[in-house]
Image (tube, one colour):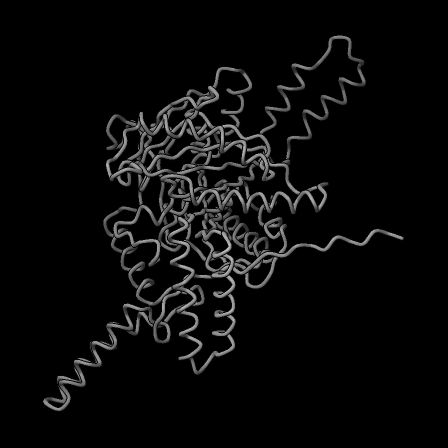
Length: 504
């Protein structure tokens, strides 16, 4: 008898945190609503006009907070983003110029926007490996990145894949106890192979006694294989807060380099059990090369040639940024290329399999370069318990007060109850998001526009099997582009007004 087929595991129960409130209002807007009603009720016996004006003001203030789109964003957020975008365009903040002819001090090519106030340091971890450490001065965060040799799911037994997924879940759970960890990223980059690595390997392995047939075969391989073949790079970056665990004093860059260097060997060994393969920290030069290639894809072959020659590119962090960029509402032009970035508006509903991102991570002929970044912000065990209890109470309150959509409210209640039960058994809670960037090389304007539209269609088709609702990073294409790079830019931590994690 044939062995029984192994049952495929499914995953799900992702939930958007919600607070208790009436309708689409949260807890605070609901309290404001009752305040307006109380003032109007008190003023009505004395003057109906004052009561009517109070109710009108309350409607103007609260209606934008009650109406939400399919992604859970209320109208107030949308209006604010539009106003902020047009204000920035009027000030010329969507255009950036760097280099020796720009106003940037020292003629440097600094990273734009949120990453401009950043520095790069070089340090050594506990195994003697050199790593680059990025410091973001405005938020006092320090980021390091690793390069992984991810094995992928091709020709791998399902049992091994299930083990990798389970180990990845355990890894995320341990991250909630990582001291001072703000968050971490997993970035998968799909880019065309320049062929320099293959060419260098063939050139060094060629034997003088090789037969003419073997030489012709290898020459054909050297000429034909690199064309159209993609290369897939996987990076994991970790972001730490400089605040000390004892007190609130900020640690210096030297202290953070020592602290992070002690943790990197443990992180790399734990990543190896998740299917990430051999992981090694990226040096300062390698990080600069990754960022520079993202902004100017045309230099990728020059960088590969410099690496193959053994001399290295010599790029520094002050040379990694673009020479010029122009951010539009739904696209981003930078150094001869145009990129479009999407953010996850909604996680997949229902249950999914472990290969849910297979199509989204695959290459496509209409996209020259693509990055898919998963951003994780783990809650501490204390925060996780408080959030699970709060979500459970809010979901139970909605089942008692909702008259329409009762089935949806009950499903939310059951999901919140399951999350609360799993958290009590030791599971962790993690905020996560997804950023997708598609880049095409520019030709003339007409052809460039056609290629951008083709890339947008390709991303729509690739994301459909994953059941992930992607939305344009409207009015923030340049910032979202940074968030998809493996350099530790976690956007919610860089906003001017930061809310506690329990209120986000």
